[in-house]
Length: 554
Image 1 (cartoon, rainbow, N blue to C red):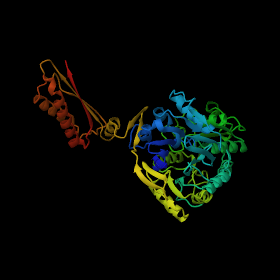
Image 2 (tube, rainbow, N blue to C red):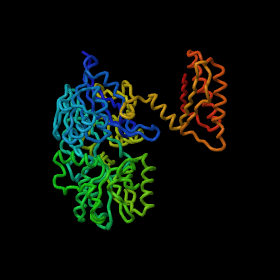
Image 3 (cartoon, rainbow, N blue to C red):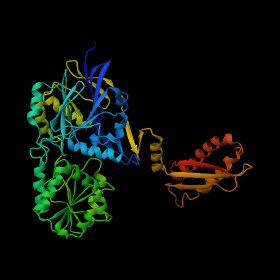
Image 4 (cartoon, one colour):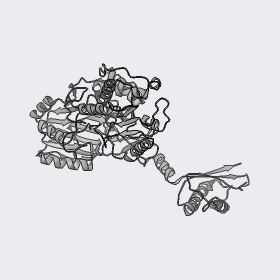
């Protein structure tokens, strides 16, 4: 029989931050079983108009779904579970997650009206599951969300530790501390490879503790006389509890603002967390509480256009008002790429005499990912034979390889999405093949490929505008009146105002060269009109608009 192989293959999350989707396989070529670890999304930017979410193309594993024996989730952040309701219907496998993650997954499927109860298997914290040749042990870690887990994936050929997202927080406030004892036990038994978070590999020292943030927030809030609005990641339940704690300490009531904030609060309560907190005040009632007696905790910390913070700042939120002298605390990281819109929001607030506090001028946030000292701890506990950096851009993963070499890891391996890494057999892991990879865009509520015509058309519309021409033809094959020309998004002023009349003349000339009675020539006529009309607009305005031609016979 052919030798058993232990394989790792990332479809997303390697060479980028977000969109995490990782595959593991074990067996020989004739009988190979697969599992998926995480199934997340990333968020689109302004270069893809109309698209909010992107996830990894699952085609490679969909083709192998008969040999897929489970989907295992490390934690409930969107970049690890956000694509589940889009991809799972093509897989129909069992899903394994801890209680808090399971509650949020159920909500996602409920929105899609998919019954997942029979397929969702809840795993207790530090629990174990057996999936075919994989003996998987959940290892409690600390992160910026409840119930983050590393996965010890054991086979008869060796063990891999998949860290997921983590940090070393000695005082996480909610949830258990990192299971250092279990990590050391796994390391003592021998680890073929550690698949490890790379996000903060450039940062020296430690990533910090939620307790330190709580103490700092209390010092800041106790000196504020007017309304306090705090915006943070809704998923950071420890930060949420800290705001409740601080509000109570300074004699204020608290109100939650934003759908995500309410959803996470309810999920945490359902799983037995946040039980000793004062009940939050409904935002509709909170506006009747005096400014010096209320704290709002809201979504929108990255300056999202429809986030609660942006709506409050623009004065269009129905329940929350902001006035000069109030304070807004951005208790979150400025995510790279969001600087422009976030600084725009800061400037808007400052212009209106609102005090803005962020990580730039006060200690109001700690990361959920490991800095270099945290990484050293993990390396010393696990002592892996090989390290494979994931969850980072290429620059992060390259630096992580350098760090691993300094930590004297024998076989660090640099990968990118699609690389199939043979962890066993062999003296050291190696990339031996390439799986097809790509991105799927969620366009409205439909998933489309990167080369989708709808995406191409919308990009063209956003850059060049839209031109529509309607030509009315009678039974004799003649134009009954001048063409109807309408356009959107094409610059127009006194200098180029004659481009419409130039187009009308050109349309008449072109129509005379075709027999309008001959329906077989319609396609050629339409293409000729498109080409020539776009050319005129290009000469007059510099734009090549998306063009639509209507031939109407009466």
